[in-house]
Length: 447
Figure (cartoon, helix red, strand yellow):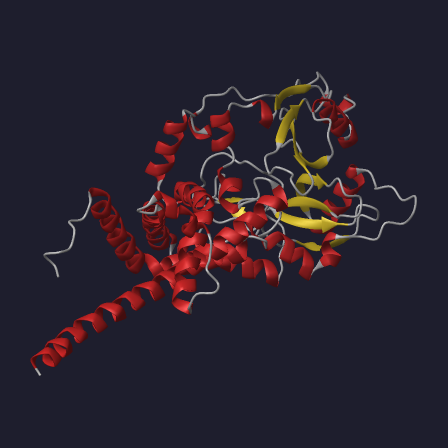
């Protein structure tokens, strides 16, 4: 029989090599990848779940004809109640949503800014400031792409606490911290470090992600049919087949459909695992990391007597920003830290397809003049990509629409180790049966 078999073609040999690599890489990293993908799937809609669990913290009843209080009045009341210094205030486009006021508590006060243990190094520049969720409880060492978000501790410095405030009464409703946010923070740590020490968990997840990238690439090679006319078989699931065939099609077809997004997730995720990869990623993209850029800081023009100067209100700053950012969106106003600092405003579009990337302006705190404007759409494509590493990884690059796609892709990724293992076990059983059938056939022939 073996003598009558046709010799394998070059493509068949290459395909078998990739099939073997795909199999053994999956066996080596399967359990870790299952945990990482499952925790990532759960984490995808963390913001939406938190708001669903505690809607009273994020929504308020708006009386007919009611108008929000001046931001200064809200800031003054929150600062008085917390005993800290307000560093920023977020004003949403939706009139029924609460404002978010970030407060950095004084070192000598009763409380101190809360810090999360076991953090992470960022993956470059921020692509979408002003988002809520476990990112607000920043991981130690976060410098951009990590869970820095709008508050929490991190990087050895107090990032403050986010207070949710009724804009019509200035009542402090609560903070962004809750049992739900703690759960998602646990999912975050599980996804990033397997709940281990960062120096141990980060490289484990990192190398598992490298293997995952190779698994996806080798899977695409295996997916290509030996005969071009059979390519459609790899795009559909034969639900009328037996359970083995259905399992094979689920692994083969769903893996192919989700492969592009899975590659985006893995290639961006590696920027948090390895510094050398992040540096190489930026070099390949032709972008200088922000920490290496030599940019002259901007300062406000301090009047001769600052105490007599009539500084603009926050409403004035927002109005000035609207002149260059004429669209509906959420504002995040970062207040000046000293008499020479500028006012920084970030604005995010809202809506189902709203991109996560924010536009930013810096203004003179004394006259409200715009000193610098960074419009995301005006940046070159390579800079848009490097400044959107986090949105590209977590899936909110185009709002809820892309998060749904990422959730489905993550769900598929979670299933791939399971369906792949079942395929492997079925092949082992098939080989075992064939080996056992040989001696029986020979014995029958002899009789």
